[in-house]
Amino acid sequence: MLGGDLVAVWEVALSDGVYRIEFAHGTTTGKRVVYVNGQEVVRKDWMFKLVGKETFTVGGTQTRATINIEAITGFAYEYSLEVGGKSLEKFIDNRAKSTKTWLHKVDGEDCRIVLEKDTMDVWCNGQKMDTMGEFVDDGTETHFMLGEHECCIKAISSGKKKSGIVHYLLVDGEKIPALRQ
Image (tube, rainbow, N blue to C red):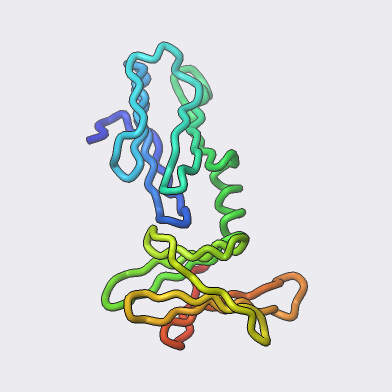
């Protein structure tokens, strides 16, 4: 599908899923093609300028992404990805602080559950979940259902200033280990 012009591949984890971004750059033809999860989202043929930027959106939340194309020497190029206006590395670092992710099998199906800590929105496999939050003695609980399963994300103080609030996912009362971010 991409041929010999594929020059860069990145994986970007957003709340509604993990997206694979592929960039094909024909340095002899001037072609630029961006694919997100195998779908072509940008195609430019016969670009005379071989350096520059390609901007597009990713995911259901339409997160802005930009591929930067820079010449290093002669006919060698360097490609970098910015997501949400930040370098991919900085974006990943910020996501690790602002989200918590769990992978768990529910009724035989792999579920990727993401908590956005700033909004307390919960996503499961790309769908924003209907939640109900409540204050409890030791913090907060955010309740939602996965099929017939009762789920709860508990937010409690760690008692340490540096680590702040700790989030736990319970599915039918069973604590699920979080992904290392």
